[in-house]
Image (tube, rainbow, N blue to C red; front, side, top):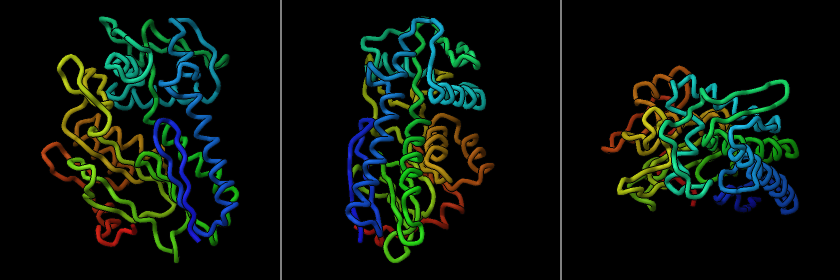
Length: 307
């Protein structure tokens, strides 16, 4: 028996397909997953004025007490910023807000942009101090975390010998167990040139998979096109790559690494993925595809996709 459920959180639809679950078991799994997404949205959203993140973002350069969850996420963002020499930087929230994407409204950037190096931490008291007009956005880490935690909550209550499920939250995937008849989960990857076209597909099981792209979230600001993946070394939307798909042990890792493919020079991004032995499928602006053998081994014919 296959059960399908859907709810909306973090501004996206979240689909869960469950195999071997009764209707009541599926409803219970949905409730657990939805509770976790709601918790993450209320804590980490830059689109809700009442979120814990926005309380920090509006703390006006003062020391601000935060939860251990937010403290750890911002620390993780800082570590990732250092690894990438600031190409990734959670301070991107200010740039995005200046485009009109998220809060604060009517935000004007300062002449000198604050960076992750301007953040101060008091580990003992769980305090964070932002620079004036510094706005944080940890979304590329947080969405994957929410998906993983929702998946973990379902796994804790399921019979892994006969049940399986897939969570699809805005194209980011978490799978556990098998599809019907013990089959893997077949996941399509959208062609960035057409919302209705599929460019390839992969079969995965007990893994996370994420696609970051420049073609869905964006707009125009002062006559210049932008998308949400901003390289903070230049404070501009990163050029070159339009779509990056990564498969990893967790959705958090897959989502983070897929975002970094967009932000980093291609050769650095590929070297990083190869060092981590992660399958990847990357599409450049000119249509060139870059993928490794590990991903190729997981590819399946598009015609075999289950409707």
